Length: 145
Ligand code: FES
Image 1: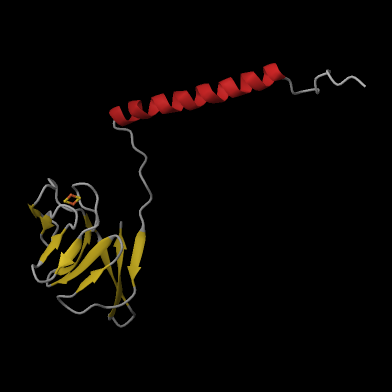
Image 2 (image 1 turned 90 degrees about the vertical axis):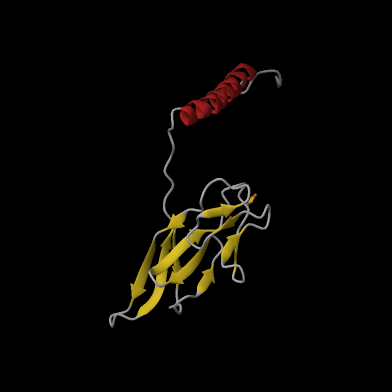
């Protein structure tokens, strides 16, 4: 029995060519990424809808993982919890009436406007849809991130 005979369809040369092609393809993709970023090309991510399944009283605050929902006199307002400085998760400090970042103490108003700290930009605001039942009673809020 001849054990040196190559298996039909698979040989070292063929394998090396395939591996080289794979490495070149990955390198090409890695080089294209900065080009896409430079030209401003971005893939729009799908919006996420988060349901707050209860009616909240006026002037209350509801904290979720990704946003803080304020029920203001003008209506509900959802503010991002991701700090615009370095991305820490911010908290609402009721005693101050401000949103504060625990990392470097940037502070923001309830409307997300920056008032102090190293953050240079305001916190993003998310659209909120009020969910009502057939009688017009508020049953929750849909926040779109
Ligand atoms: S990450 Fe929030 S202030 Fe630095």
